[in-house]
Structure formats: C-alpha cells, structure tokens
Length: 254
Ligand SMILES: Nc1ncnc2c1ncn2[C@@H]1O[C@H](COP(=O)(O)OP(=O)(O)OP(=O)(O)O)[C@@H](O)[C@H]1O
Ligand SMILES: [Mg+2]
Figure 1 (tube, rainbow, N blue to C red):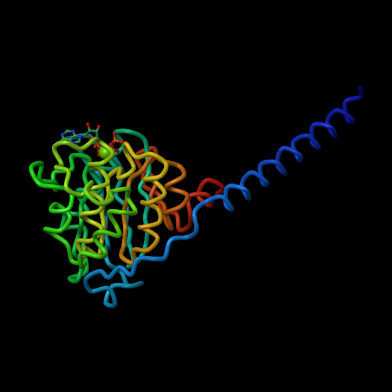
Figure 2: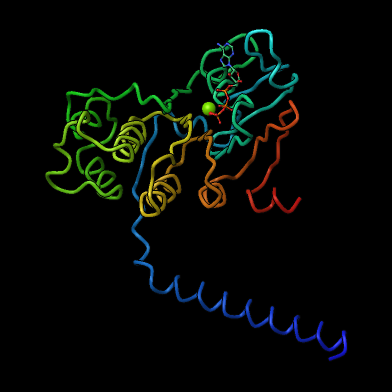
C-alpha cells in the first residue's frame, strides 16, 4: 500500500469516526430529558447592577506570607459575568477569592453588591439543622422556589428533612450551593462547587447558574462545567493572571 493512499484512508477513517461522534452527540441530545422551565430567580438590586461594573481591582497582587503568587494586575467584573478562575493547585485561586471578599484597599465593589461565598469548608451550613432549614433560614425566595431548586439538585420530599451532619460530601455541596443560590446574593463567589458532584448534579448546577442573572466568580477543575458555565476566564499561570473574554472553549483555542 502506498503512503498517500494510506494517509487518505486514515483521513477517511477519522472522518467516519467524526460522523459517528456527531451522531452519538445528536442521539444524546434527543434522549436527554426535556429542557426544564427556567426558574424565575430574582436577586437583590438586579437592575442597578446588570452590565455595570460590579467589582474593580487596581494593582492587585497575590501574596501568601513572603511568597508572591501573582504579579499586580488590574481587572473589572460586570454584572451578569460568569467568571471562571483557573490555575494549578497552590497557584492562589482561593487567595484571590478571599481578596475579592475582604480586600477593600485595592478592590472596590459597587455599593449594591451582596456577596454569597461558597468555600470548600462549607462553614455556612449548620450541622444540626435539616437541609430545608439551612436553605430557608437565609432565603430571599419563597418556599416554592426553594423546593424547586432543591428538587433540581435531587432532594425530593422527605429528603429535605435530613440533617446536614448525616449528609454525604456531594449532598453537603449541593445544600451549600442551594443555600447561596436562593439567598438573594447578587455576586456568588464559589470555590470548587463541583467537588464530589456526579454528572446529574453537575448538570443541575449548570442549569441553575444558567437561570441566575447575578454575577458569578467560580473555581472549578471540571472541564465540562467550565465549558458550560464560564463567559470569561481568569487564568493563573507563571505567577500572572491573564483575563480572557470568552468561553472556555474559545480560551483553549486561543
Ligand atoms: N496564610 C498563609 N501563609 C502562608 N502561605 C499561605 C497562606 N495561605 C495560603 N498560602 C499558600 O499560598 C498558596 C496559594 O494557596 P491557595 O489556597 O490560594 O491555592 P489554590 O489555587 O486555591 O489551590 P487549590 O487548587 O489546591 O485549592 C499555597 O502555596 C498555600 O500554601
Ligand atoms: Mg483553593
């Protein structure tokens, strides 16, 4: 067999493989449950923040003790942005999120901003209380929306009365997320909200954030979640943070 012929055959094979892939993809789309109706989520001060600058940072440098994590950079985040913060372990992602919450010298937040912070420690949850009580205690939404959100996350009927101390890792993450999601907070700061989640829970999170009109700054190592959720990327590498305006797919291509 001559080389060009072989190459041609290879090309054909890979084209066929692509076609099969596309078919599979289409099949999956068809088999998926019907699109869920959007949840009509309100956040506090929504109108005054949409598409305006909600957070602005000048000369923001990352430090941990005497170690420099990233060199000074400027940034701004607008109402409705879904910003993914990516970077290797130990590069300073959690540090950056904490600075957004606490550093009022170099980072300014619009007066109408109310933050909701999801940390990996999930310290917002009260162990002795039920899922429903944890979520309801700080809710800005009515009971119907709370139950709808919990249902999307896979908590039905008496599930919601389980106490947090009895929950699995994934159930805790989902409870913490639900609590913030209905809290009325208009800027969600989420540190690895996808940890421990299975594919169904991931899809639920994606769809809920799709319905959320507020601003989200999140850290995730889950490629699919990044692809579905992010509209902008802040990437930490080589001790710098670069800002990319576009989806994760576009970022990878660029
Ligand atoms: N108070 C502190 N004193 C000294 N070093 C610290 C302190 N807090 C964090 N660090 C260090 O700063 C670096 C960045 O930590 P950070 O938690 O922000 O990383 P990360 O990107 O969130 O990592 P991961 O993906 O593992 O969550 C790490 O090397 C960490 O050990
Ligand atoms: Mg971290």
